[in-house]
Image 1: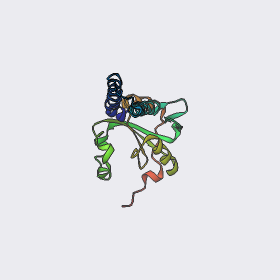
Image 2 (image 1 turned 180 degrees about the vertical axis):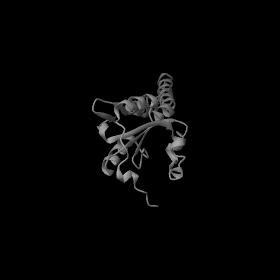
Image 3 (image 1 turned 120 degrees about the horizontal axis):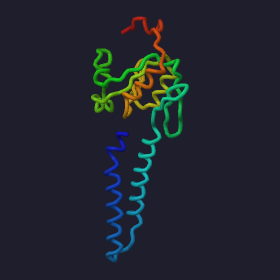
Image 4 (image 1 turned 90 degrees about the vertical axis):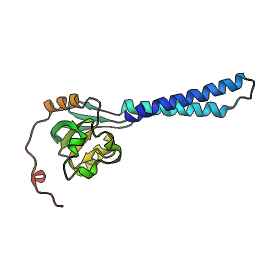
Length: 177
């Protein structure tokens, strides 16, 4: 969603400038230059691709599990594998001393944004797969960080479906440093 908000104006504006410039050139009696039209069409195609990706990349609460949708793939995380859901600003989540250095780059600009954070009991491979669908730096230990537009609504929907369970033995074990 963020990339579409940041780039839509400049992409559409640049394409319109290219098309208007070519129209003025042609109607002014100069030779038609298809390269301007080609660049404008490419810019509009890029804008359409970004918009399409933003519209097809989403998280959905389904009957059997949490559904992660991307343009070409979908995956369901069963509710039995989800242990806890909470909604909080990323800044609060990354305030823990062990996580403080992990709020870098792309996530830093969302520090004040509410995120739905889901604790999952999945294998390492399943967590990596979910991280590939959710985006870079969205899996930390057993937590899935979901930056969605309506994080509170997603959290409320998940709260009713996730059975609270005590942490597993692996989660209780002290971590080595």
